[in-house]
Image (cartoon, rainbow, N blue to C red; front, side, top):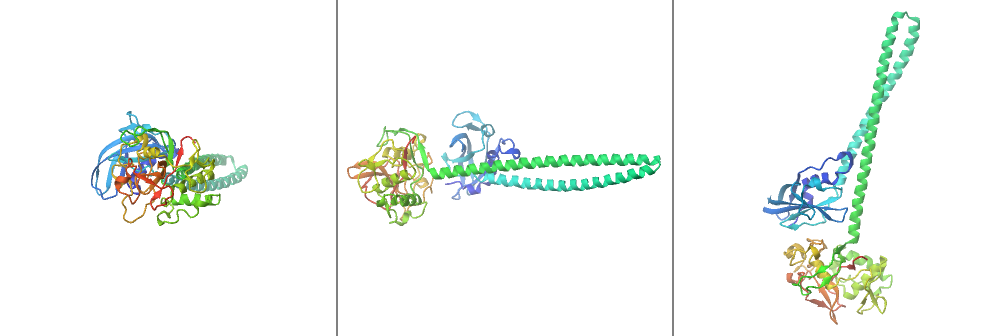
Length: 473
């Protein structure tokens, strides 16, 4: 079950008010109650327990506000609720309102359905463009008003000049007329003064409108900066694709139970064909000649967003070294004291190197379980493998990464899709693999299952991997 963001217009319009509350004269106080009108795929009818969570984008996902909306009626996928008055501040138990919580202009909204948090990738980045368009329209209308008033001022100035000429003519006539005409001159002078006063008033109005236009222009510029910042943030997220996992201890129920795991970083997605090809082409031209053509032998990895497959353990650790060197980092794997580039030999891991590597088996399982945020799911992110895992697929193909729901840490496809190489040695001949693949059974894709060990030289159609790095490097 997914919430379809393209059909939550009312939710976006209501949240847009919050997102832009600091953006100049067009904003106002945050309302105390907001509306959310959404749609669930699957033609769902019945009651669902709905919650709302608001995260800060400017502080890398800090939870700002959470509210248990309660039971919401769903009719053929459509649902509606209001929120904003009965929430808690962040992870605390302090009651608060939405209006009292928001302090900046960069947030995103996430729903929970029956306790399950929906995808964190659905960011409301289109809202500033709508607001910018509205301000641009206001600026255009003000510009038109200024132009019209400027025309009126020109016409009045012309009238003033004409009256001044009349006054000069009348002055000449007064000198030749009798004193009984003097009061007419006084009347005309008074009229001239009134017209001058009106002219000055209109000039002041034009100045005021010009100032308002300048203020609106400044607001538009500020919105453009906000939009660019959001674009830059998205670009950084897309480029990094690494999730920081805080350390902890694996549960006693695991075969690796009570082992401690230090903090580290792990790939949000399995390494894709597009990423593999880009680094591989650089690597082949810099001495990693064994990688030439690797990954081309199977069709399942040829879409840029699909995981690369048919790669051996030796292939992927050499590729990790190439990516590290390409990005100016210290490579992790060496043979005889030099960077591992060619051949099929068990490499030495350089402890403390800041380059890319494969995760250890205990790091892999800790991340798959959700780390410190674990909810104890059987699969990575859910007890329902259909919600998170591509397994037992009869069409013999993997799927594009991130196609199903992520786990508690926002990591995708740790159950199913492709089996993933780990650093650990099962025995002198085999390397450990975890997670199960598209051709595996559901039981093979649990977070605890560790039955796979394979020859490190084997390239198979559902063998892939994800990156890891030591924390703090």
